[in-house]
Image 1 (cartoon, rainbow, N blue to C red):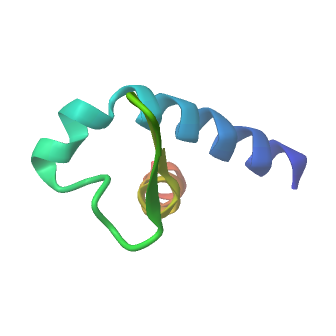
Image 2 (image 1 turned 180 degrees about the vertical axis):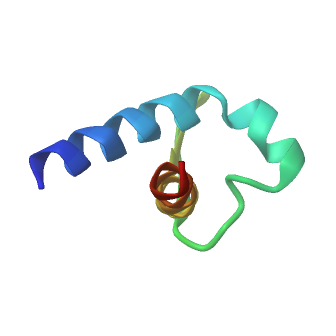
Length: 64
């Protein structure tokens, strides 16, 4: 269980950094994706996208 939480956290950090690139493909605009705006600072929290992409990665891992 802890391992999956760590993987999800790492995926969240990775997707947060790649958000501008991924938004071109529609990832980051799913229900459950939040953007915190504090003045000029904008922090994306792509929770929905992280879950979807983690499930896809887990499915691919099972197949391979």
